[in-house]
Amino acid sequence: MDPVTTSAHDWVPPKSTIARDFGSASHTYNPAARLQRYMGQVLLDQLKEGLHQAPCADGLQILDLGSGTGWFTGQLASIPGSQVTGVDIAAGMLRYARSVNPTGIRWIEADAEALPLPDNSVDVVFSNLMIQWCRDPAGVLAECRRVLRPGGRLLVSTLLEGTLDELREAWYRADPGHQHVNRFEPEARFRELALETLPAPQLTIETISLDYPSPLALLAELKAIGAGYKGVSRRQSATAPGRLRAMCRYYPRDGEGRIQASYTSAWLGCRLPD
Image (cartoon, rainbow, N blue to C red; front, side, top):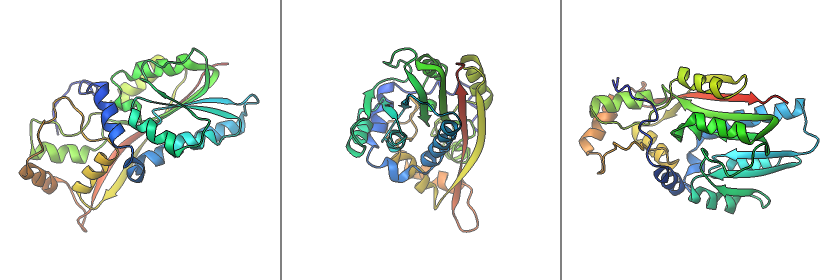
């Protein structure tokens, strides 16, 4: 396995690169976003269950942080009495989201580490698979806490260390000394950040395995959702065909030649004191 021991966020490229890559994927994202839909649905179900147990009489101000194509933003807007704001750093994602979602949603192009929202201004922060792309996840959590009102709820999903380890190992054997897979925070570190920033956070971990016909299909899905390798050390030219073929040989397959990719998935929940 890759022996590199630097922080998971040392590799994070400029925010302009993140915005460009995800903006460019706006029209291919939804059909390929299997994991994103599953993880976001878990968050949405948690939110609705919480509202059922403790309804808000005055309506809800909901922030969808890292709203992307607006897949879940529109569903949040369907909650009776809700007023929803979608925030994303990628202008391309926001243009697409506006075009496919109902009117009445406010859209803001902004950085999750510096939200242009007042203190104590929202009841719910919903953030699906965004925070792993941020250099300062603790800063993002602190911003979420700042904008939440007393009694407000934070619901976040992310990916942790162990994600795409099969792909990482295959690339390491095929092209040692070069990174090809994005890094993710270890569970212990992310749990520590949450405990330092939030009151009584609850963290749930699940390893999700998705099937693919081949390693190339996995790479195509990652590209379609804008989640290809973004490290500053990535090669500036296309990967040599020989290295790509070698990676495919090293990737473990089942008896039918298919592959699996593992995603160490985490859901973070928190309710602020009243």
